[in-house]
Length: 499
Image (tube, rainbow, N blue to C red; front, side):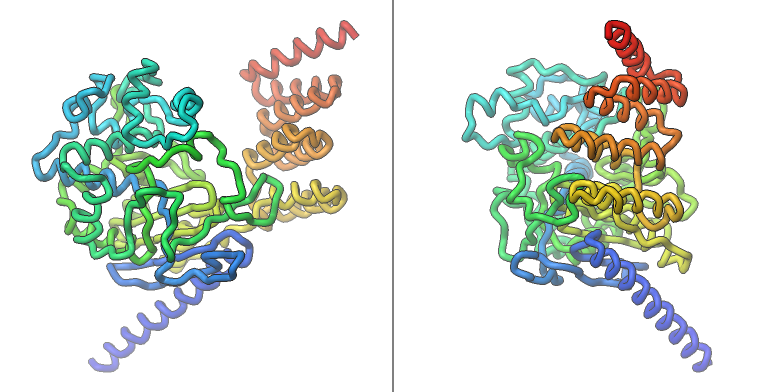
């Protein structure tokens, strides 16, 4: 009997050790290729099976990331906001089917419910250009949650769609949910989370910053690529934000929590063992949203069908178990908290570079856990290709494309990435690079009507009308419904006749 027990114990030890080696191989390779720079924790049945950190918290100073390194977790925060609302529901302090107006009396849209905030079906306008006038009038003002409703009222901002009729990811929803938490609880969002989630879950290294721009001692620096053809990471403090509101705001509830991988593991464990939220409420959060027409919310992430609950996403295919998650992305950071409820497996990834492919990485980790073959995410083809073009190495760039066509598994290539690269070159008036990029994209994606359409636009802007005409014709051949290409064909024909 002792021998059998020893063999079982030895087998378990060897399996864990081998998995640990595989995990380390995966993340070491990712780190080497600048695809991961941060902390990872993987657990099974409540026990940590792998935990490690890779890269630097400050690349300039060569300070390494460690277990105490803190990261902005971005949109993983939405799961905390949803949890807080559902805690208040559990205590009988609100009904999520009530109108938002019941709790925020000046909210100007009477037909939007609290639940529709949490499942992103409210129809509210996005915040990207909502405050442009306010910022022009008060350039020193920092926009916060409290400014959202007054701005809606002032500009009589219309809804994007009838509440409950569509699904649209929208940060404003969770900013308003945070206001409801404050209204009902009588305390700040930060204090509520500390008292009702951080402390009960023993998350000692987590907080909601009063000002996101001010970093704590252990908080990591964030890094990104300055453009689509750069291969050198730069500190985000040297880069201009993509939207004015990003520079001029300090929203919370939609993002903003600063935490560690270890603390997120504590949060996951406390949440899924019902220590901070009841089973009924958690199951409600993890149930796919149904729209007014009876259809369930459905969209694609990394080629997989996904639905949305209350602050949580979930894969619709449950053949490998019910997998729920939320990822996060801001300039210079990518994150994900993924939990397989059926198998009690958890993956937490916090990376201080904005291009970490957290979904392919998570898929590889799940395969390793199940002792199945896995694929290590590879470098981005368009970025390396664009860098060669920008460096004047056209011959090497062409050679890279030919090598990829022979061996597609050597790099990651997407139609969207090549399209963005081509247009960036075009905007920067690097027309030859743009044309070369779109030409190479047609070799990689020969059945993409969109690529040929984009190539036609680049040729037309380069005053190559005859060649542009051929590309638009090819686009219509691939997609007869492409009205833009049809319009451009007529326009070019008229220009050629006049010529």
